[in-house]
Length: 252
Length: 230
Image 1 (cartoon, rainbow over the protein chains, first blue to last red):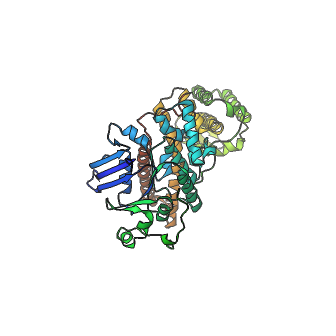
Image 2 (spheres, one colour; image 1 turned 120 degrees about the vertical axis):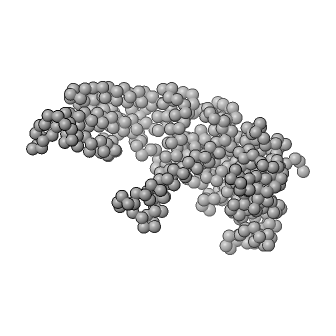
Image 3 (cartoon, each protein chain N blue to C red; image 1 turned 90 degrees about the vertical axis):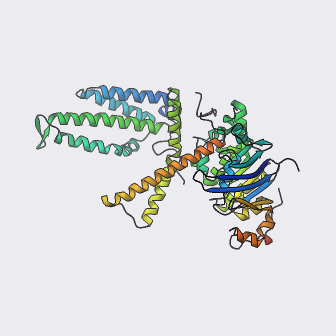
């Protein structure tokens, strides 16, 4: 296999108050893969995400993005390469119009004029929100806001898209629409979630983070059907959901 | 969340007043206010003139006068104070409708009421005919410090979010049987306000994280349209 887009090795981190969140995490994601990062609440998922684009700096271990180590010096380039979509779109959309919000990232990269405008339109079209370009974000529905949040990051043309709980608070229709969009995008995705059916639907491979270490890494189907593993790490399938009987949409 | 379209103070329209550039309207408002405040309160006919001018502007903007009138309740605390003035002020007394009131107090009350009302009508007219976003652009054109415009922009963006959060907290309180009926209930409201403050502060931190994740380095980039270059 080629060198991974995202390579996390031995990552450990303790918060300033002494609480240790990560104890030596190893994760790698290759070009074009869609990987789910599963884990119960408090497993350290969000802490891990904040390391991927250099918001937090590793206590020990390394994070490398397409061969570039995440350090203070190249944090700007790392943030272009790693696009993080946060859980609450209200945190991510802070500009007066959808256009300005999507333009914010690429404008920080120095894009201007027509190039910038094209980037914005292209990113919005990819999430099916092109018609809403002049609307203020807070007038959109929650599902629409989440899609615009994805576009704000796509506009930076990242090498890997990191989504924190992409399906949370979405109604089933918005959830499916977002899944269709994510499947249609031609980017590498790391999806942090405890929505196991969503992981199975979208990600052929899963990594399980529990108590600050990676406890499993393999095919999503194999992980979800490993009852002992699931029970040991507080991962539970929703009532009535059995991965063995699900017919998956053709792998994208 | 489902906030309505436009702002609560904004009345959608396409009149000449609506189309006027925001910075022109801002300057006009500022000019009018300075003139009104500087006018001695004994020059009664001039105040009638100001009011007439404002009414003409409102008529031109085709904003229904009742729309402005309803929103003038914001002035009520000042009206109460103005009404009290003739009774509490000192100085020579005079009889009005069988009540003994202070003459300078009457004059002060008139001044406060007239100038205040003109200010409120003028500001409401500006708000009714100008999108908040255009106001920011107007301020920027008037070379208002960029940081302040940024702060106001964020305030406008998150006003609805915070108001909604406040509404949810109130519903949650009332669902558990709480009603703020008298002063003894105020500590609960104060704690709610504190919680709201902390939540908003934490949201500020998360927004900042999200901004940094998209390459923010301390200055707002030029995104082309609504902000930045005129």
